[in-house]
Length: 336
Image (cartoon, rainbow, N blue to C red):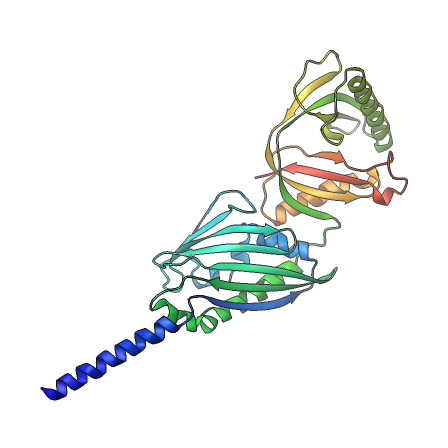
């Protein structure tokens, strides 16, 4: 009987000791891995602000090819969500959400695992080494860990470190394998706006089209000056129909609000809010057709579906810059 009491006492001491040890463990943990990618920071950033292509470099996707995935929220940026369901114990069920983005510098994800009490975060820190090199630091941070979960946190480096290393290896291969686009192209969202538009046509010859557009923009500006209408954005244009001999186009200038138009040639139009791909092209207007082609290739590579005709907005041009290499034209395509 006495021996049983001694054993019980020893067990109590051990339990109290273990509980005390657990209580004394830190309630937060941090782990990180890093890699250098031979690409500018913005190319890495584009991969991290959306879950659209996450499976192509995820270290966990190969563990269960039968896993199911669901996407919700916006296509990119804060609020974008990715959920998975798997019968594989290493994966289970869970979701991730983009919490924060700092352009070309930082992206923060929150991770949620079914049956797990805390929601750790994964951060990607982008440090530009040069125009063609970026150090990527992938971190794991968890706070408010309680109870026996603290013991699990002691082994987090060994448990996740290898997956992080594999993921960075795959991310590096994907980014370094990107097509060599000559301009920056990225997803964005256009808020709806009104614009004064003038539709016209001419022979399908670039110099004639450029001249006709310049005349029509002059007509729009003259009408706005005569009627005290303030512009609310940069001039834009779009090709509405293109054939072997003729081309139809619209020249437009955004305005603050809808108004009555007293002109047979000028109309008030509205551009709906939409998800877009935006290409920032620097150069003479002769290179704009190639810029459209690059945005189309980008859409294909990143699995975007183009939902309508593109348009261009003239940010800087001959009115402010003599050097054509400084002319900035933004190319827009609506996508989903």
